[in-house]
Length: 416
Image 1 (cartoon, rainbow, N blue to C red):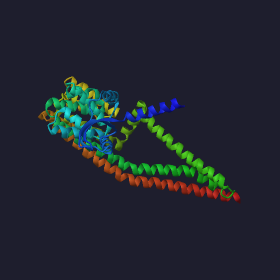
Image 2 (cartoon, rainbow, N blue to C red):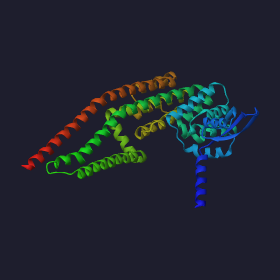
Image 3 (cartoon, rainbow, N blue to C red):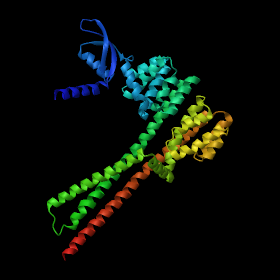
Image 4 (cartoon, rainbow, N blue to C red):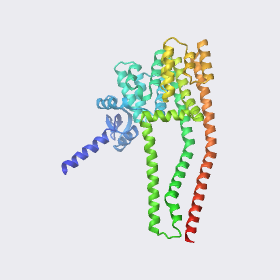
């Protein structure tokens, strides 16, 4: 029993310490002497609090970036970590402002690791810092972690460093990510109300179907309180099972490639929804394409990078055919026309860019046009949701009323 308790304590201590960051500090003690040392804490605020409790006046507090154990943990974690849009934007923003200040790469990533509250960003910065301290370039340092912020953005940052336009690329990527986050949050917020309403309607329907209607059927023949309680519990159970099944179905679709492809194909076949999805993807596509051209990346490679931002397999595969054509020496305009997924305006913009040699500018214009089209469609969907929900609730109320009255009259006539 004692051995088991000791092992449990060791396990708890291990799980606690694995989330710790090692901080270096320089501080004054009660005797006004300057002392230095290291302290473990989940973040810099907790580290400062620990030192204050010891009665120390902090003069310097920073991440201890020389800890080998920490770098071993970094190598195991970062390669498989994928940042959220918010984390990507935070990292790129911090990188841009520090780079604009004229700091070296080592100083940039050291400061970001020290100031960020995100564990993922801190881990990535320390990992890149380790690589740059070995004398590796930014491209070599990022090569292991390209999936973290996305292959397209990683390639753009590396191309920006090579072309001497890193500050411009970082600023443009940050703006693109901010716009993408705003669009996604706008779509999600507009869908929260109808989804909640649909869930409520489904729950009410199950409740009436399982419990209320049966109470109406037996109201004149007599039904005890115990039976009503059983029916209510059955209704609650059915609601839980239904929503669990829906949740499992959604999870299955997200994890299964074939199912995801089938659903994706169905959604892109719906006229209005198809346009909304394509506008979202093509806005990102042309934004990345514009940045790639601006960074001096060759045409075929630039289109391939932009294609990496599209998660829709059908569109993705069609653009891959265009990439093969461009590699064979075909014009970008012709290759895009053959793909058959881009709007006439976008193709016209690319055609103008090819003729004038300003593909980065015209691709950006195409992205802005798709963004405007997307905003208009989102507004239209938002306006259509409310009347659609009212019609749905009206149908549900009518069904409940008709069914309830029919059950009532059936029970009433059965008496006579």
